Amino acid sequence: MKKNASLLFLFILSIYSFSQSKYIQKSEKLFKKGKYEKCIKASKKFMSKSGKSPELQSFIVSSNLSLFKLEKNKSKKYSYLKRTIKSWERLVHYNTSKTSFKSLEDSIVSNIYTFSKLEYTQRNRTKVKFLHQSLAEVYNDTTDIYRSLFAKQVPVEEIKINESLIGIRTQLLQNAKQLIGVKYKYGGIDSTGFDCSGYTQYVYKSVGIELPHNANAQSGMGKTIDLKDAKPGDLIFFGSNRAFHAGIIFNNNKGEIELIHCVSGGVHHQTYDNQNTKYWLQRVYKVERIIND
Image (cartoon, rainbow, N blue to C red; front, side, top):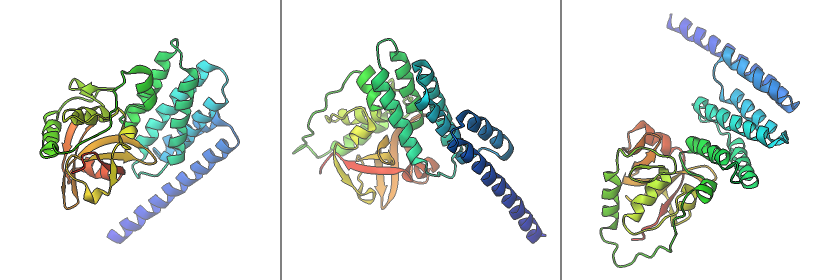
């Protein structure tokens, strides 16, 4: 009986996989022919039949991005870029198997940056700001351009730590822990609300170390070390070819890493066996040592 049930399951799975593959091929064909609106419509229809597929959703994202590139009207370009970001958010949500869409991801970020630089004026400031807010909701961080256009600059001084090293890590971790529960706030840099790099900036500043308010910029501030060698208080960054999220190593017990960072739900301390910790540790970009003992 069990054998028959297993065979039935495998048969159903093979039919499902075949349908998915067939739909993906059809969407790909429409995309390659440049029929972007039809590709979007067809891909949505296919997913209503076969389920939420990151591969099918990627054609919707790519089609929206292609329409943005082709459009000459500035207002319509902005609309297509908004659609691109929204469709990308859905892809991230559907992508439970963590398939890599790195080239598409990089293209989205690159086009948002280019559009922002070319189109930013006082008149459309709100539009550009919205694009970066939307992007931050995907990556849990404030982008470089958002900070340069809309926020106060935090001076970055050369980090010099010498004889007063004793107790700095302990104090830093105590300060970090006191902020557990503070809510997530886009662009936040104080205890009324943080984004990820605003939190790490605030905690480090509390022990006299200035960091920029951007995860990727922070990732180049210290000495890169292996995760296995990380000490409590070291900075940890997540992403692929750049850092999109920042946190602090709270503990490293023979490779069992605990994190403390600000995510969409606010500042959290996450133990090694926490599912969210495991999720983030699969996406480590680099670990930086700012406090050189």
